[in-house]
Image (cartoon, one colour):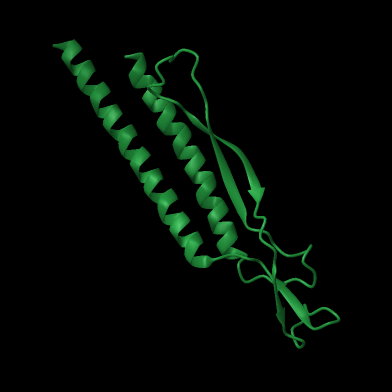
Length: 139
């Protein structure tokens, strides 16, 4: 029975982590078209780092919760574009845009969404199994 509760814990932690990932991807997509006058002021894409949490009570590693270890900025340099009439153009006429690939971000969003849905399904199935176990115990 305790293994079933570990599954709840693992799936719930994965739901939380994927929710953070979805929000981060949405932020990247929302800022993909932002411009700045300097590379330092340009939005940098964010990436979520996941980490598994070793459960001391589960030496077999049946259910290992996941947590967000951090959110890091992308290392790619901003893209300079010559647009002398742009309101954010610097003295040389350049604006800087984030190095965000919207197609890649959409793929990340789809992956996070599917992972989220899979963990919802795991929770639903585990709940159903727990209910059936309780029904057998009542008979």
